[in-house]
Image 1 (cartoon, rainbow, N blue to C red):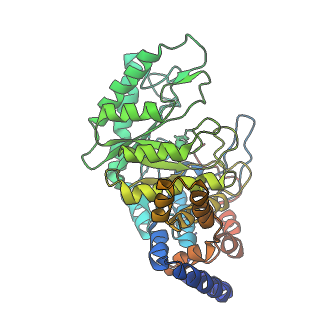
Image 2: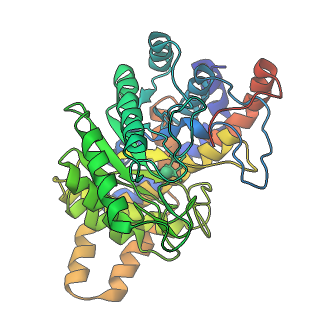
Image 3: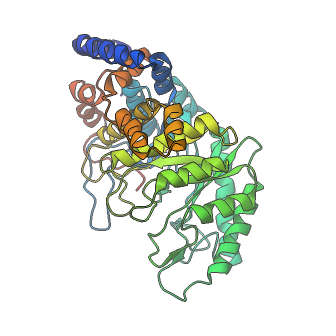
Length: 426
Ligand code: LRH
Ligand code: MN
């Protein structure tokens, strides 16, 4: 299904008066505080987040999966669904594919479809955490870190194949996340596992086109529950440095032990010019892959404060890959992704309201209270009229969730696809 511009402008009619009143009020207030509202709105409109191809259907856990009707059953339908998200929000202009879950059958056709929907191909993800049915070697005891050279070589070759697939689609980055680790003390020699991983990543790195990046994603545990080879930002940073200038760290918000200070990690990785991108989601306990901003919205705001500071002060750090990585156990996947896109825009908008100069001055004065007042003043601002303006300026809708329901998108998808289609992915 495709949402056409006429449906969008018809829908916006009912809300545009309220929007204009709210926007004018906020815009006047911010302008009186010296804020450049126009630049904030254009930064929001330019902030495109990649949708994970593996999260367009219902997710699940080992305890079960409850399907969602009208799920996409092939890559073409997944691109269509990303197109629906982008039509409504105008901030989902990219998709991140996971291989082999989403190997295109017709590259030209899929590129034409994505182009027509203004969808770019962001980082491609390799998968050496599941065995493919005709594979010669198993990844049961790891992939790039495996004690077996044959297993490591199979995993290296898979990553080189993923690069080729991404290259045909116009992608410019490879994301490597490894489940590799151990479930019991003594099972692994940590140094051998780490060195095998480093050597394997270097072999993959040699196959990276000049204008590509390698994003090394870390995670403390699951599916291994005693040790994980790439357990934290330090391990990812060391491995990226061991590969070279085109290798960076990837921060998945759910891949941190409770109460980790993620904004500090983000800040220092930018200072070192080694922050490559994000997998946005939220979590209460583990890698819960919940809707962005649904559990810890203030933490997300503090991360965006460091990102805004870094984007202004760390030219040594590359443009970042913005991606969502979530799983939907109880919500309509598209509504869940719309809420995540909204939360990301909201955190970014609030962070753009922070007077970084005044904050720096207060920090130099050790005026702790003033520092907090500056941050929380921005956080307490209802920035939704700015998000609406950015969407309207780009041809999107004022309220994406309401539009999604008013336009009956899920009903239309069920009519087209039926109730029993299942999307590949997690
Ligand atoms: C691992 C992870 C990784 C993906 C997978 C789908 O938990 O975050 O980014 O490969 O989820
Ligand atoms: Mn992830």
